[in-house]
Image 1 (tube, each protein chain N blue to C red):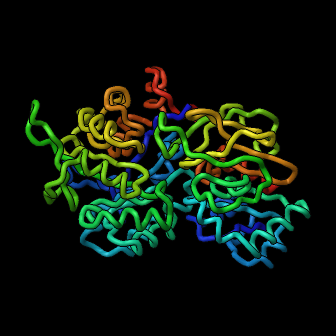
Image 2 (cartoon, rainbow over the protein chains, first blue to last red):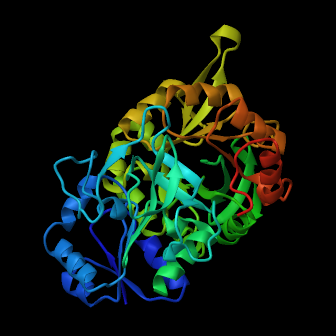
Image 3 (cartoon, rainbow over the protein chains, first blue to last red):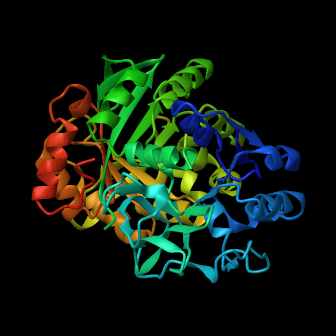
Length: 195
Length: 257
């Protein structure tokens, strides 16, 4: 079963609905025990980095244990940003620190939030993006962005380059919303389910 | 490159899609769930569902329509009309919306914008503004109307857009009452005035009749997205053809998709 971690950060129903559409069972849960039993874990979330404070403690431990056991983990939007060290949006909080660097605000020169369909520049052959052409369009909506790091396998350009897809072992993160990115997004979620 | 968005709008009354001219004279245009899916497959970048009767009637029918529409839709889905409180917004999000639009209730109490943004994020709050031209020449400005274009508010559309941004709005849905349903082009002056005043995306609405109108509103109006209803429902301008034309005109589009 796929566990969708509920930490009160936005609308998780659409992520669950997308998995259901693909024929995979997923449950929205805030129970560390259920997360520990999951075969795959999704960390969704939209909104303020402050919301990740609700992950501190038992949920964070459950996620870290799952990473140790190589259970595939997918962070979406805020869920991906939490995998970095920190964010300017809530400087007092710490992220998981799986990837180096701090999430930062977009520069003044571009409109923020970055809303709409933008293109992915693949910099590797990400397992998550198998079957997706270079320059695929996906749907973004965010005011902060994660830096380009060694684990970045897909970039996006908007007032400079940022991480759109990160991948390290069984840990994956996407800044955009695959559950809202039409057929390209559904293909990505299917790839995750088939890992 | 971030593309300009083409948004298909479903104006819903008592569970059916309707289309009016200048906010009245409504005609039936089909089932919302079916039309949303059709438009999504045809290349719409988003779907907006506006419950145009909501200010008067009960919400149960709407929530059922939202649930049915959201079930098969895997592109952004915005719902508005009659959202007066955080609880109203929560019900619509629970039914499957990704964003809500607020209009009259935000005019009455702008703090509503912040309350919804605090819980669901700014990206989920679209402030809808129905604007009407007042005066002309150097005296031209744009007034704001409430409750489906029926009541004057004494507010200026450009200033209200800016205030809405400060309150936490993630996008502005800007409708020209003068152009609504006329199919004679968007109000580019209105759109540009609001775009220049805010740093959040602006969706232009009202007046779409042909591909050239979209080129104008993206180029001259500097809109981030453009919304249309009847020309898509009635098949006057298929979305795919529209996007191809816009792409040829040098407007960045998600196409093919």
